[in-house]
Length: 404
Image (cartoon, rainbow, N blue to C red; front, side):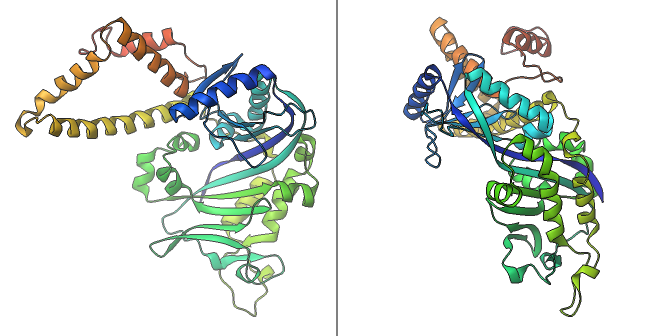
């Protein structure tokens, strides 16, 4: 059993405050465009850059949902400019927390609030998730009947188990508790990143995917989630100061109240005398350390590059599939597939030839570039000139797309 990652995996915060009228006007226009075009639209408000969607969020009265990227945040903004309104909410991505750490993420969060011109009076912590990932041998099997609550025999009798996931008679995930209270989840993280195409986690873990696949090992995550009801009613946590003072107690208490035992037990046995599973002992040990000093060591550039490469693979596969459709509809002979690349090239070239078409295509490229953003290994966003230079180097200085 090997520890490969521990750190914050989720953070939701609500702010009492409001946006300036100028920012609301820009978001309104962007939302109208998103509704008309049925896709998120880029918005630029000073140094704030993101994509606004066509819908808001009725729960909380948020008119706008704005996404600032895979290593950014999902923002929810209200139109109201009342000073007593909790009109701003943010949800942090797991990749952002893994890349920048807790403190770095909070700094970036406030930087974006400043960039959009928000006025903020106070914060309320709505949710905090902490995750510990273990590399486990092939023979590890998750057993739901080995979970127990403090002072009781089995978890099932208290209706604490919220859900189970099974695959071929093997339990791959278990959720204990319900939000916005407290939840503990243990699940097959490797299966989850494959299903949701989160390939950047291999870099965060520092694991070679090929070596891991050959080993037959597994990766399981233990994730502890504390919702706003649990934070406020059980521990009186609302502000950043409260969180830093008491969060360790929140998670340690959760791992004490709910335990994963080393084996099943008979009805007459006292579960407190059965040792905890080594995996559970390891999680508790990590929680007992200083949570705010942990980091994955993965730079923003590395994480973002993995995401970009993964997206290129998806697009390439789509292009190959569409080319097969084009070949059939264009009646290309199966014996003359060598004609197909030139046909595809001519079609693309026809759409970029001439000043008007080239201008339209460059506008599309700028929009795509805004969506993905290119980072170097230190996390610095590259400008268009730097990207063009790197592409020319990659293509051997060739100017013709046919050569490159």
